[in-house]
Image 1 (cartoon, rainbow, N blue to C red):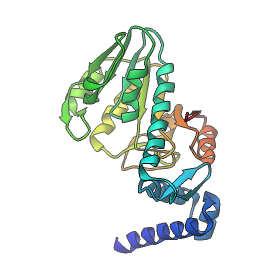
Image 2: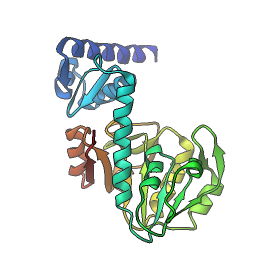
Image 3: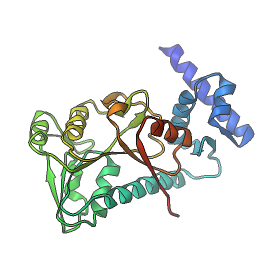
Image 4: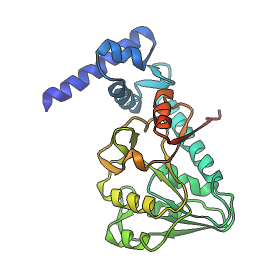
Amino acid sequence: MKRSRDIVENRRKQIISILSKTGEAHVADIAAFLDVSEITVRRDLQYLEDANKIRRYYGGAKIAKDEKPEDIRDINERCKDEIAKYAASLIEDGDTVFINTSTTALEVIQYITAKNVVVITNNGNAINSHKPSSVSVVLSGGELRNVKGSMVGEFAIHNLNRVTAKKSFLGCSGLSIQNGMTTEMMNEVDINKVMLERTRGKAFILADHRKLGVNSSFVSCTIDSVTDIITDEMADPALVDAFRENGIRVETVRING
């Protein structure tokens, strides 16, 4: 186990070294130099970006020495915000929609302009979220997990199984061709599955560029069950193309500012 961690840490140090020398590099070139798959490189780049050491862009990455960590966080927040705005624009008058515990999905509520919309969610943080007067929020109930404010367990599942939604907007920890939609929270898997199964219209997966190509611990649904993805323009075009080649509709929203 230690040897495996050492290999990963050494590879990531090599990536930093490459970017420090060249300023920037494409995923394919890094993969060829290190003799690993492009998927492996993307995972490493995701980790390094989360650590504020590099900045990803279309098909590659550059060293983040000229950017402050708060600048990177601001960009990521703008990505999530624009995804939420676009998702909200897809909601029509009279819709009932599912929203899960994702922070991006939660942001959708404040941008809804349609009338007489019902939002059904297991996100306890929705209580303090701004909502338009024409939107009703219904909480699933269930065991409250204070860390995320999520409501889970049999009680929540039972209640969700009693309703259907016209659309659903579900965030995730990772989304890949190999494993589909994944999450870090095991107790949220069944909630996500029920929401997908009880959606009679389109089910949208909200995943900013940092989530694509990433595999988290627990599978909410396989890629065969994914029909629509909303991401942002910083998403790797190769990953976007891979999803589209699997018959999935992918919308990449522009990031303003």
